[in-house]
Amino acid sequence: MAAVTLWVAIWWLTEATDLAVTALLPFILMPTLGIADSQTVAAQYMDQTIFLFIGGVLLAFAIERWNLHQRIALSILSKLGANPATMLGAVMVATFFISMWVSNTATVMMMLSAVLGIIVQVEKHDISVAQKNAIAKVMLLGLAYSASIGGMSTLVGTATNLAFYKIYLDAYKDAGDMNFFSWFVLAFPVALMLLAAAFFILKFTFLRHAKNVVFDRSYFVVSLRQLGKMAFEEKVVFAVFVITAYLWFSRRDIDFGSFHLKGWGRLLGTQASFITDSTVAIVMAILLFLIPSKNEKGKMLLSWEEGKKLPIGIILLLGSGFALAKGCDQSGLSTWLAQELLFLKDASPLFVIAGMCVIICVISELASNVACIQLVLPILIAIQKVTGMPPLMLMVPATLAASLGFMLPVATPPNTIVFGSGRLRVADMRNAGLLLNIAGIVIITVASLIIRVFVWG
Image (cartoon, rainbow, N blue to C red; front, side, top):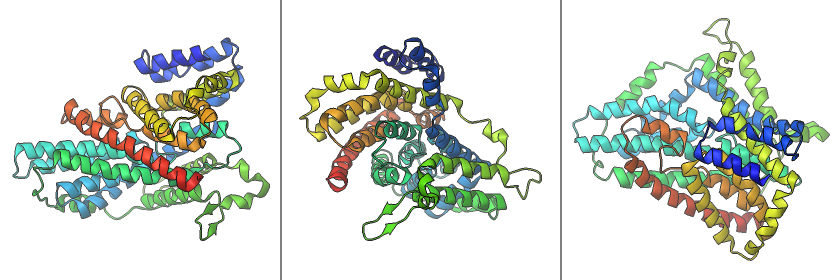
């Protein structure tokens, strides 16, 4: 199993072939080497967590088809786009919010045309070339960074979170302390702090000489008016989106301290455990295929033409990580790792978490974030068994740290997309990204230690 993991890791890190092709290796190697039978390995590739991802992606396709994302973005920009700083904040807030529910890559693709439109309007103003370039760079970097940060907030925001979710549930079946709401409570405050840090780092790095530039917000107001009133389809998709989010948050009981909110899962009685967040995702996605469009007769809110765009590569990548985690447990590799890591038993939690975040951050700059976290989490489970630290205290910071790829164009798809605009240099991304990586490691580490005190005692 160690050899299989090493083989897959090398191919992922070096990109010897496409990541999705490498993802098929565990299905061949694990049965061949007698680690697990084909049926067991295959089941990992279509785990229920995969369906949470599929449902979230289909909802994102509907949002994109009816331009709901564009209306949200322009609504914010028309109110806040008065100068470079407020415009940057508006772009980042809009992107952050959308990325909480839509994949980071799709969010950047959706928002890129709006941001490029902003840059074109900026270039028409009577300001220096240096100021124009600085504003263009800060807008593109703000878009990429806020998409990655927003994805940290929810389980469906990025594939790394879903990878953690499946591996955690398998390793700690009886814990009962992880669902959509509990992840949000742990991750959203961290993401908000990181968003604020990104804003101030970008503002300090690029906008020092463009403070006094003022813009006419009429471009965004006119663009918003051109969209017209919200169409029937937009309203229904938005309603489905809101209901889905509510059902995800309220499936289980929520304890607010002063009062206790009962989850709707109680209505199912003894079968409550049969229904998961992925069930909700698929039910709401199917609704989109069944509700007819008012303006496009004979069509539904979502057609299978959109469904065909499901990212099979990401699905295989997730499944392969689940298969590797299963193999580590079933083969005894996790137990062996725990014994080899006994030297960490008396180590400071601060040292363990900070060191872990640094290592994961460096790896995620060079390799797929999903691949990185799926290789690291089984090792963290072994460390947890040795140190006795709460599992979430190790695994949540690690998962968040895997989204800290801000320095290189190849680190994340959002970075690659904005770099492809031709308006950024590697040095621009490297300098701002380094500061943001450091800020991210500090924020995640400190937040983990605070959560340790208030949540786990």
